[in-house]
Length: 449
Ligand code: BGP
Image 1 (cartoon, rainbow, N blue to C red):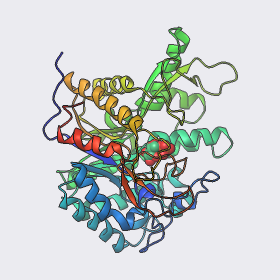
Image 2: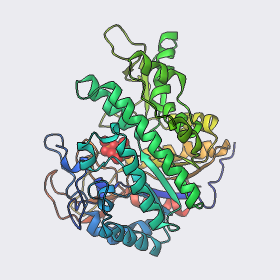
Image 3: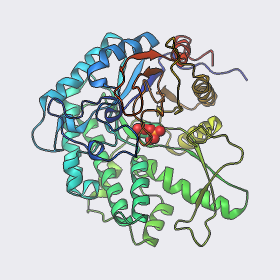
Image 4: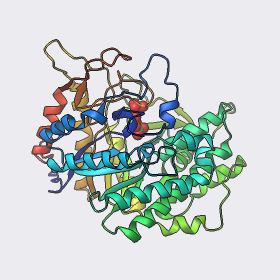
C-alpha cells in the first residue's frame, strides 16, 4: 500500500507550556500559580527560571522559524493576565502575549494556544481550587478576556491541558489521604462545565476560533486475553481516556465512569443547568497528547480500583520508565476518530531523555529521532486510513523543566544549557541533531518518514 501524503497545510509544529518554559515567575505583575508555590521533588529544578523563555523568546522563535515550524503550541499563563485569578486585568500580561504573537508572525508560525496548562492561580487554589464552583466563573472570565483580546489573531485554542491527568493526580492524592475522591470528581466536573462555557462563548462571539479539549490519551491493553484482564482494561479506558472526550464532545458521562463514582459515593453534585451547558458546547477539534500506551490486569483483593497497572512485556520503556509504543498511537487515533468523528491535532508527543552536550556544542539524540519518526510514520498510516489528523506538535520545541523530573529530563529539539540541575547555567541554546532532522521532515511535508 502506498503511503498517503500529509495534507499540504498540515501544521508541523512543536509545543511548550508557560510555567515550564517562560520563567520570570514574578515579573511584570505576574501572580503566583500553584506551580510557583509547589515544592519540586528533592534536587530538581523549580519553575522560577526554567528556560527563561519570557526574555529569550525572540531568539527561540528565530530558531523555530529556521526549523520551518508551521505552528507553535504554547500556553497562556492565567496569572500573567489575572495575578490572583480574578479581579483587575494585568495589562502587562496581555502585552507580553501580544509580543509573542507578533514575533511568531514574523516567521509565519500559526499560534496554537492553551488557556490553562496546570498553572492554576495560587489564590484560587487557596479557596478550594477547581472543587470550588467559583473557579468556574473565574476561568470563564479569564478566558473571555483572552479570546476577546487576541481575536482574530489566534484561531486554534485548547481549553484545558490534560484535565484527565489533573483528575488522576487528585484521585491518587485522595487515596493517600490528601483530599477526598468526591472532591477530585467534583473538581473534574467543574472543569467540564468551565470548559463547556468557554467553548460556547468562543463560538458565539468569535466564529473563526477552533476550540477543544486537550486530554492525554493512551492505548490501553489487557495484560492477557483472560476475560478479567480484558474487563479491567475496558474499565480503565472508560475512566482514564473516554470519560474526557465523552463529556466534552458527546455531552454525557459514560456509564462505566459514572457507576464507578457512585460505587465510591463520589458522584459529582450537578447544578441544574450543568449537563445542558455541557451538551450545548461542541468542540471543533479533538486536541490530544500521546506519549505511551498502558497495560492493566484484573485487580486483586488488595487493589483499591478495579484494574491494576502493569508492565507490558512486549514493549520497551524509555529511561524514565515510560512505554514506547508508536503502534499504540495509531490504535488511539482510530479509536478516537471512530468514537468522536472530529479532526484531530496532536498537541504533545515526545521522548524525555538525559541528553549530553559535547565539547564542540553538539547534542546527538538518535533515540529522540527514532521515537518521533516512528510516531509520525504511524500517524501517516492513520491519515492513509482516512483519519483526519491536521497537526502535530512534539513535546517540546525547546528544553524546559519537566513536570515532575526537573531540567535533566529533556524533550526539546533545542538544548538549553542550565548547567547542573539547579544552576542557571549560561542558558545558551544549541541545536540538537533532532533539530536538523525535524527541519528536514517539515521541508518534505513528512514524505521522507
Ligand atoms: C504532559 C504535560 C506536559 C509535560 C509532558 C511530559 O503530561 O502536559 O506539561 O510535562 O507531559 O511530562 P514530564 O515533564 O513529566 O516528563
